[in-house]
Image (tube, rainbow, N blue to C red; front, side):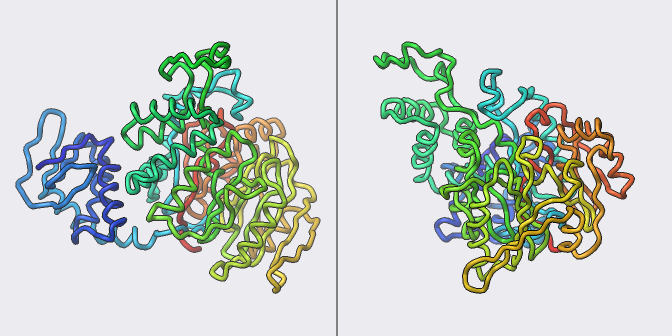
Amino acid sequence: MIIALPKVCAERFLRAALLRRRATGQEYGPFASTLVDSLVSACLRSGKQTVVGRGRTAKCGKVESVTTQPTYRDGPGMRFWGARDLVWLARFLSVRFQDRRASMQGVNVKSEIGNLKKVILHRPGDELLNLTPNTLEELLFDDIPFLPVAQEEHDAFAKILREEGVEVVYLEDLMAEVLDAKPELRRQFLDQWIYEAGIRTEMYHDIITDYIESNYADTKAMVMKTMAGINLQELPQRDTHLLVDMVSDRCKLVCAPMPNLYFTRDPFAMIGNGVSINRMYSQTRNRETIYGDYIFKNHPDFVGTPEYYSRNDTFHIEGGDILNINEHVLAIGISQRTEPDAIDHIAHNIFNDETSPIDTILAFNIPVSRAFMHLDTVFTQIDRDKFTIHPGIMGPLTVFEITPDGKGGTKIRERNEDLESVLSEYVGEKVTLIPCGGGDRIAAEREQWNDGSNTLCVRPGTVVVYQRNNVTNDVLYKNGINCLVMPSAELSRGRGGPRCMSMPAWREAL
């Protein structure tokens, strides 16, 4: 039988098949496993509208076999991929895709500038439609992005990365793959999500569960709905006899949205070959870490990754405060969002992991303010010897050097030096600090507000930047930096730049 899939469904459908086979200890034939990983992305690049596979059953994405039959004729506005096409494509791409997947199991981020090979993004969705002027402060936004344009800008960002040879994977797809591969986790996840949304009454728990299960049978649609949130008017009206329902506005949010999710840098962070599943500063954002928790515990691409911090740990830490200087040195900001107690905990776990080569953690004590929200708003590395910086951090800076004491604990040395001296010592060569705005006070303030220093390095000397920060971008060009410019009129309203919007999962060694 022929399985014809709209292109928006094809990738998750085929990947679910592979994940199920892996979960039961089975593998596809010599070309079919490659097909699952490569077919859809190749088809989408070619602009075709429909992907076709062959199998004895189309049940839940399960493809039992692929046979070589004649290619089917094109229909109006679509191209049918018959099994002959699948075999050819799989063979054509097999070595490249098989070798790449095998080499990128787990995570590997031992610098901020090594060639970027794999990154996790989240495409903004309906969660932005649930932002209102009254909820901006609570949901940590300063303005409301216009969703269609924000999505276009984010797609342009992903396109830039793909053109640079980066494998782009989406948080929502990874989560859907986990639940498709392990259907028994679906109800567990849904119960946990409802509880963490603040729903405590059994009646509302049941109403929300019934609503989602009835309207979002498709796994990815369900995942996206948990991100978007639910307001009261969406739920079926029932006579609950509860005072809260009699006085509540029907537009009231029952389960709040997660509009900050497109900043994938913060909920979890890659540290060498390990991960920190963060406990975030605000309750609004702390709910976001549920997805990373399920992915790293269950997805075959990430399961087994050493966990240096848990979302259930006591103290707050966020990914924007974590920078991998090199294989041996990790930088963490003591900031508005990250507490020193969390750094102590991470240091203990890293130093007691015999597989980790990290032997030094630098804790940068930065001002507690929204302008210095995270360490990556203060400085980011863009080349082997170059960093962009916030001009307000040019003076003396308190840095704590944390190293193992050889007895299972740590020792700490306080240093009061300028940023250039500290970075030069640990990078191993004299560094150049490039101020946001090029030293012009007004330009610096304006462009720092729009994350002029928050760049994403895809290889040494090549960075993704926001188009709107033209003064800073010109300074980078003059310093020999190749700037990949992306549109940013709407995405920047969330107060985060290209680095904030990305979580590298794999970088090549320097």
